[in-house]
Amino acid sequence: MKTRFVVTRNSRISPRFIVRFLLLLAIVMVAEIVTGPAAIAQSTLPRPNHVLLVIEENRSFSDIIGSTSAPYINTLAKSGATFSNSFAITHPSEPNYLALFSGSTEDITDDSCPHTFSGPDLGGSLHKAGLSFAGYSESMGSSGYTGCQYPPVYPTYARKHNPWVNFTDVPASDNLPWTSFPTNYNTLPTISIVVPNLLNDMHDGTIQQGDTWLQQHLDGYVRWAKTHNSLLLVTWDEDDGSARNQIATITVGPMVKAGTYSEIVNHYRLLRTLEDMYKLPYAHNSANVQPIADIWR
Image 1 (cartoon, rainbow, N blue to C red):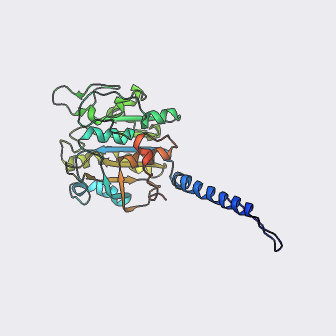
Image 2: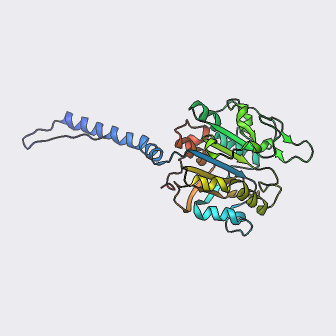
Image 3: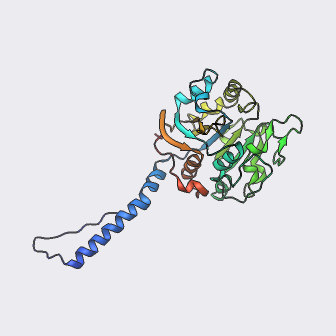
């Protein structure tokens, strides 16, 4: 906002004019403080055609970055943005998934099942904005499955790692098994979340096993995204149980400036960034943090 005042040599400036000028100046400064950073952050964020978020399990930053057991993930890290101060919200798994999806742990402090919440959340907000969402869970029994684990004996799918199934504003048709993941990436929804099963997300399996799964199943998307204005996010629900709870978070896409970034990032900031990309309302604690705005071309 710009205001011009013209004062000639013979002009007389009244006290009332000075008071009005100072009041207007104060209003403009307050407006800049209140709206400026948010407007700047939102205007500088890209709007990818598709975002694919992969959530891995229970490994610390130092377990992954620089590890010879994770060659593919480290290749992604070198080609994209890596956050050296990325942290989960809490322990154990389930409240972190909820925090990333809804901006709140929903007062859950364990891995209990089942739960039902009304929102707000990422999936519901996308639908209300006329956009689309889907979650793909490996080894889940069927589309719309609401059970706590699958199969019943030696389960490899766990509902505690599937936050969207808990929210009433997310259609059951968005809750999909990995077998529904499209080979034509153009048909992906606006935002997708992929959760490998307990063997392939590093929860029960090894880091190398999870790294290999990611390369075999999603490298095609990574290569396609480079020429289709699309984005990959890879993060972890929590570390290996430490109080520090530092995790790896990696972002790869044609709109990303490659490098290592030392700013503090958590699940709430990731959610806020996705919300600002598509001008969605802020869910719970995402309203209290800033989006990630400095990694974009």
